[in-house]
Length: 119
Length: 119
DNA sequence: CAGCATCCTGTGCGATACTG
DNA sequence: CAGTATCGCACAGGATGCTG
Image (tube, rainbow over all chains, first blue to last red; front, side, top):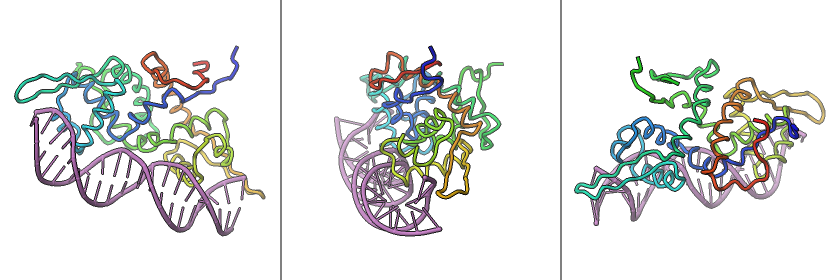
């Protein structure tokens, strides 16, 4: 049929773009994804530079978007573990092409030592 | 070797994330991509709601990131056409998996009538 | 430990008016 | 037509201190 050639619509991104477009959005998702589970203070350490208030609000946001899951252990001292939801895991996969693109020749600013591992 | 299992590094996105993460970043790139070439005022019409100052600054930004190209015709009245660079075209392809993901069941907020055409 | 409350700054972005 | 200049607001997000 080919009724609209190759036009692309970005509407599906409407809601999530506000979340994952933020400075720490993808960083948090990916960090959790890399570790499986992470606690609040572990995230604070891994994400160098983030403030507690920002992290807290981001985590709420991500949970509301059903990208991460929160598990609370009623202990003393309290323990809370964050992990990716299935939707979050899929998102993490979905951005790999974007990473591949960013890593290509055009992008001259790759300065970190880590590279895309096992894609 | 498998030295870090399936860890993913987001560093490659460092520069561009500031551009494409912005409210109008992907929208502009996609709109230009859908049309091939677009003029300033055409973009103003297509991107309902954007202000001239915002559009101007975004276009500069996108050009600096080598995502779009600007062609100036010295005529009266002046004519300027924007098109995607090869890098911009590749980016547009690279976000398709992201769109597919956003369109899936998890995302209950798809309200627009357009859908992913011919992916 | 896992946050919340408060304050403060930078800036993304809209509105409007003006110019080459 | 293709922008620039100016103003103003909302909000992301950093810093710090406090709490259950």
